[in-house]
Image (tube, rainbow over all chains, first blue to last red; front, top):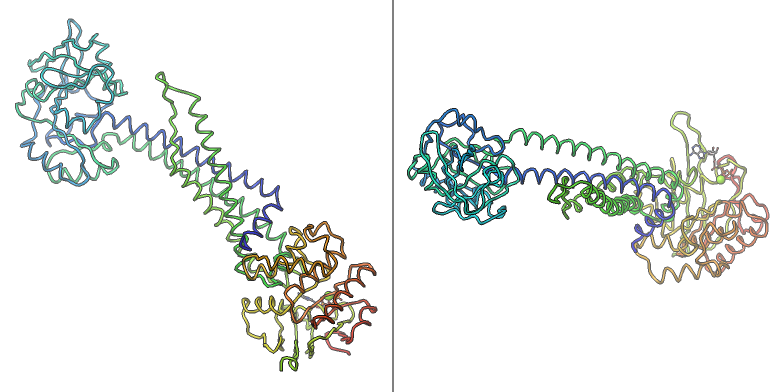
Length: 404
Length: 227
Ligand SMILES: Nc1ncnc2c1ncn2[C@@H]1O[C@H](COP(=O)(O)OP(=O)(O)OP(=O)(O)O)[C@@H](O)[C@H]1O
Ligand SMILES: [Mg+2]
């Protein structure tokens, strides 16, 4: 074993109580970081997944329709739409635009849709709905509904439609049942339920009716038209930038999910900020802990350090002896800390769960998180050992032996 | 030629302490030690013996004058070079043994060599064990320093000072806190080493019996060589 390691480990073992105390402190610190990150990352991931599970990353609509958020999933202003039975507009030459936007870097999928408000009636029951006329394969590559089917299949062809579980229960619909869709302008269509989905959002489940393009085009009197283009991008947080770019290229109104969900984003951001703040203070506390233990050790051992120097130990080796102690404290503390944090997180997850058995507080324990926390702890260890180590290396051997 | 060259040459060594009020502790010391000498350094308390030893041991720098070790002028050497020279040519025995309490006797003896090489070797371990056997501690090789008596600890310190066969050993009151029997034993050890290996010893002592057994005695009074 190299000299520095030999001496460092012996010193750590010699000051057993101090070493154990500081290891406990580092472990608790690291476990707080791991636990907090796991919880907040988990929450954010599931929130994002839920939000993006029911809306495209970017929606392109004709510029005139600025005031109407057509596709704001959770806040579909059905009432607003009801009040203004304005005719839907088609995007000019949408096939060309579709081809154009598909080639824009960052855009991974695009779907042309006809989306509009209508009423669904079955017998005497009537409910306001939002009809999405889609090209099934294109639509599914933007919003994955197929894996969320609760009954039947995603079979959108001919007069087949899929609806949400909410609407199905409101109207008492089952697979194979018929329902009538009608608009305030007087058009209507008779369709058959082929599948029932659950997208995990009450509003969407109660309002969405996904039909073929043709059904919607007829219903809203947009022959061969598309009222919006819906896009999926590779990296969700680039959506805003790409949307701005697309608006410029196409002259259309481009709404990104980030704009539609501005409040959610503010919430996520402040959550992340408070996480960073807490972690920052934990890091400071851990660093101060390690540094103070090592400084005390250097003071206690200044005579011994003087002896080591007197018998020919280079100052650089003395420096490394203390750096290694800091690094080892950080590393060991991070291993137990990661385990402890993961345990906390797992335990917390079991405390509360949704009706379907999924946890209310989903935690996200990734290898990256452990690696990050460990790297951080080692850096803290080395960083906080730097001052004591330099102090040790600079000790004047004669002085240290005389007064140490 | 090597024989003609003194192991240690001290020329006009002056040491002052303090920034504002300067106290001159050593007033121009001249001294030469030849190979194989066993020299006692005596003098009243506060006369500057330890200060002189620290300067010779390269643990402290003189205000003026110079220390020449084995023909090598140590003025102007940087910390790295001083550390290396110290490790190669000097052995230290202090009044309070100055061993490392966290380590065993053997580890303490091999530590200087280990520190310089960076890696341990079987030869180092064997050498340390051999030195401990030579000072009569064959049974204590793997014992922790803190479990040894004062006399035993001082013998470990001597083993450590001699392990790398330095040409010059500096001992500051090596028997200072030992009972008479242990003190005799420790001094005898140094004398034997001096006789067998030709190691030069400079021994600071307050014990007249020990000074009397040294071939040469240097007395310092008030920072000057009196005899
Ligand atoms: N670092 C220092 N700063 C200031 N004065 C010092 C320092 N070291 C030693 N002195 C002074 O130098 C003088 C000589 O001290 P030194 O330790 O060399 O004496 P000594 O001969 O070894 O005494 P003793 O026999 O008691 O060990 C003393 O007056 C002491 O106070
Ligand atoms: Mg003294």
